Length: 471
Length: 97
Image (cartoon, each protein chain N blue to C red):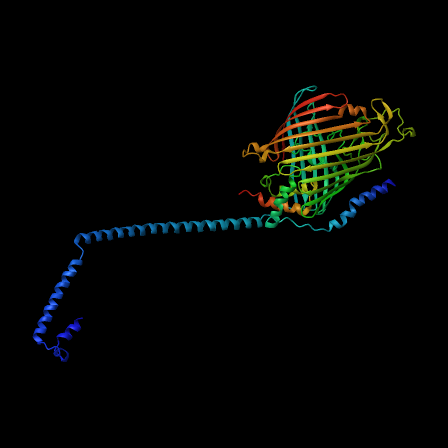
């Protein structure tokens, strides 16, 4: 614009063409410029803020500045905290890594076990019994059964169980429940030699310890003087063979000295250290588990007993009787036994069933009732029980309630061909109990038992209190 | 005759089975093998509960568990490889934290 004005006021060829005098043009131009300057100054003055506006703006700027300073301080503090946390997390991560590494090193560095290893196991129980008729209420020390286990590598194990009991007069009785050597020949084959618990059925071999037995006492016919053998002396092969992913066959096959004539014409299966005849008893159990919590079993045993020579201690014959006389034939008899069992043990449920039957052929033996040798008729023993227990572990949220386990069992022991035994032992037996599991192998229980004797119809009721500990 | 029969029975149950069995080498349980420990945990729950309550790993030390579980190998007719899995699990799980 200025350049243009100067061009307009300079004398030159272009301006001369307008026909005006230079001085007038110059003065007019100056006047115009002065007027324009004045106007422009006034215009600028009209747009300038007032002092108050400037103060307000300064105040606003100061407030904004203060806000930014505070924000900066806050962000700085947060940043420092985050940094501290990150450092702490890093320290923890390093500690966790060291712990894990130590665990692996510890596991790796576990000292190898010695070639000979041992373990003392067993169980004990004590309690009280209250009877409704016959017999006095009494405290009872039931059992103290230490089990000694010694193992050499994975080659052989010795197992021995002693049973300590006190009788009614306070005398201590000691019995050898079993003493056996187990040779681990193969993952699926173990060879057992010595005195072992009978593999017939489930109860005697696996369920009789009082911390395992849900009731605390044996079912009718599954204890002493029952149909289930207690043990034998001989050899046995046993093991388990997987079938598919979850199924399994089990087998226990034994040859032993077998049974003998017991008291009052009964058969005794207590595991005798010497056979009474040349015949060896052969028996065992075959089991099948379609799934781990369902087991089905079949048991059998066959042996012979001597009616005149093989009785238990205390059954001495009168000297006047010639036991080798040919008039006492048959003096040996075959004993056949078979049975079936089942178990369902899923979750809180524990269901068991067992059935055993034994038949002894007619035999000449000493008849204690008659006081002479007599032909004893065929004798049949049949015993069975069914038992159901349910642990309250899935009911409610109370850990106290979860430790209770009600249980009920009903069984029957039938005897034919031996009146004396039938009168004393044939019965039905109902048990109702409640277990309180203080620990997996420590239980306090209360139980009710009702025995009805089949011969005379007598009923006996028992209240049982018991504490049992498996160690 | 009976003696011969008894001898045959004894041989059938021991010698003939023991012969090939004695040559069989059994591996030791490895308590640092995660796969074996996992198998052992499942077998521990499955097999022990067949007869009694399942007992906690912390109840025994390594040696006690090793022998106690081998005892169950006989009593429960549990295969040896399953027993080693259970041993590995219990021996890896019984350490106090």
